[in-house]
Image 1 (cartoon, helix red, strand yellow):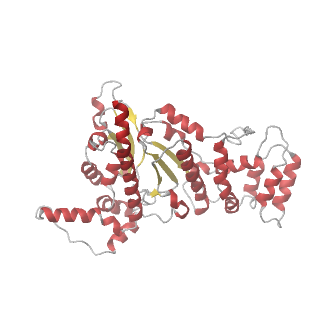
Image 2: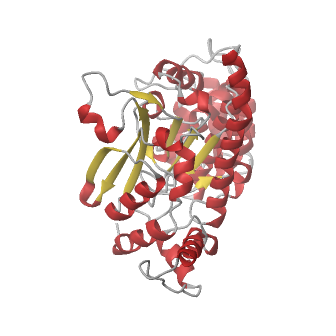
Length: 415
């Protein structure tokens, strides 16, 4: 954490953080938005790692006031509870329970440390970010086509991971068993377990595997080159460990790897793998591709209804990067090293003429409204514009979808 972070965070919260949009996003009931929102849990992580849970707010303005007052280094969003979280100590035994929350997914780059050789731990680069691109494209398609989910908000964590918020109203009501079943559906056995034993790949893979291979195959040649799988001793040794006990095949693959005249070694190796005759081994090339590139979900984050997750538009204290939404339609052009950060945003604002300051106690009502409008539009002068505009459209689609389905729901209940 830098001194810039602590100095610039108050400016960001006061001038650019989309408080009203966040309120609209988390307010399900259009007729009584405050009623739903006030039962939502928030947590703040303050300076010196002071952690405060069970915060809740009645209105967007109250939330904004509290954020600007406390200046949290991190904001987490939790579930909708039976009671307002700020009153949880008043609940009788068993009376304070998490009822609803978006289905969320968390994919962290550190979970790929055994298959990425360019970086490790908290570090990332464009080479290993390819793994995140594959994960988003595959998981997004599965959630939309296999489950019919509509409102998926993908968010960059600000440092080394990605989050997905499934915001469909029906999904918010899913209990832990349904969330676990979805995670089980998206999970596959590891090729090599911790004991070194090979997993059993099905002779007839389910459609999920075909879908995963479709996305992985489009990136795998580049992945092989970027991670130097057949060029460095460590990578080659790790790759050979994935092969079954077939001496003839291993000798042939080693000769391919060592042959400097072979340009596309992976394609040559795939042909060799297809000749594998070891009992119980099927589609060995697929097994290897899945081992390296299949999405690695943090299941615990997804299954527990009461689990909190970092809010979009937080500023990461280690990088000062903003946790911005990711437009899946433009995913290939998303660059985690080009997202807005606090320093850049401050420079954006300073590059424009400063607006005249109007004191609230002497300003007219008209001037106050104009000043408030200018404040809410200030993000348009910064690199935050395309991200907040995207989030605004996402919230509007949710609202329109909810309004369009409301009459059908009413008729069903009346019947």
